[in-house]
Image (cartoon, rainbow, N blue to C red; front, top):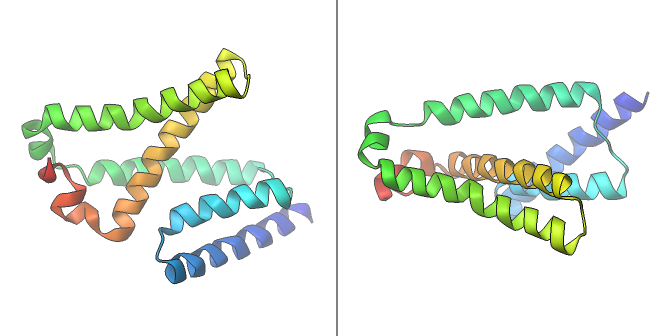
Length: 147
């Protein structure tokens, strides 16, 4: 019964996030993250094995889709700029999160490192989702052509 309740609440939150994103003009990925934080903290939603499976599968699909969007010729042409932006897009959230968790929150170094990796990879996925959702992956602004 608990799995059915979790699935129902998650489905309603996803529907609510879709409606809110259209009404507010925000990316649905950002609204889903915000509602997930609220649901996890206020409603007591937690991960289950089937949610972990779906999340793992979705991360593989997202990685594949992001790779399919890459133009290898353009990447070679703008290699320095691409590596700089990609590296900083991972490194800055990683260092910021690690420093906050270690120095401000008082976590152990290992826990801070894990959190830094988790949030920096998540930030890349959110940026990709926003680019796809807004159609910028097909424009010069969302690709390496704008560099």
